[in-house]
Image 1 (cartoon, rainbow, N blue to C red):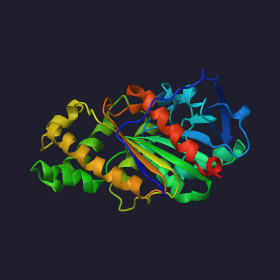
Image 2 (tube, rainbow, N blue to C red; image 1 turned 180 degrees about the vertical axis):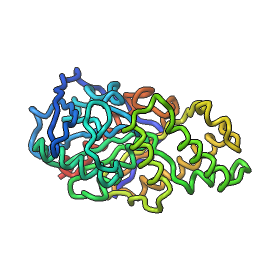
Image 3 (cartoon, helix red, strand yellow; image 1 turned 135 degrees about the horizontal axis):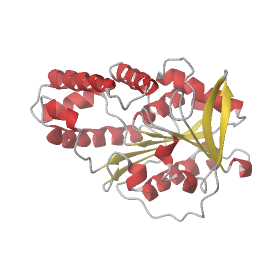
Image 4 (cartoon, rainbow, N blue to C red; image 1 turned 60 degrees about the horizontal axis):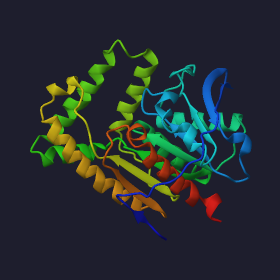
Length: 295
């Protein structure tokens, strides 16, 4: 059993990007917007890379790396129910329902596992839940700047001398108050609400026993103006929680049979936009170590 814990990653060359194909797939009478590339040339047992967007996000969140990733393995990106161009399916967008719906989509498209899932922000928790429900179908995970847990949130508040319970409650209240933002659609708010409910739940899936890579953005930017009303210093807190998250993700990768941790020191929250080559190299690392490619 070998683990690679790294703060640096070597360069990697990629061939010219492939052309993608967009389509609408009917899932229980609801149209899902899906884009693929490289599936026609897929070899038997080759992993398929699936991209899971952040909360409220769409396929556009992967524009910076989608086509280049198709030179590593076939790729899929899609709009979750009610987001982007996909129709609302009427089901609560909980991690479990999203995982079940994704599998329905893949089975309808007759795309067999193994699946290597790439998640960003809230999407990291969604791919972890998919791996928890379907471990035999999961060939690996790549987590890009995962959302933090309540315990690390509170621990970081303690680190800066703030009240953990007061600060945590104020953050959640501010987040929920922002649901009234007129720029959000009704379906986006449904997704945000489901994320907020999950955030305070006690369950977090264990590390899957497959190759994993976790990337943490090392240059967090200033928070949005609405966070100025919080009862703690946001700038100090974001530094403290990044330190806590680094420790947590290092531990998380050590629990994997083959894990890698990468500090993306030139990136903010959107690592795939700030350092796309770093993300592509991490994807390559996991794909090359996935069960079908290591037998």
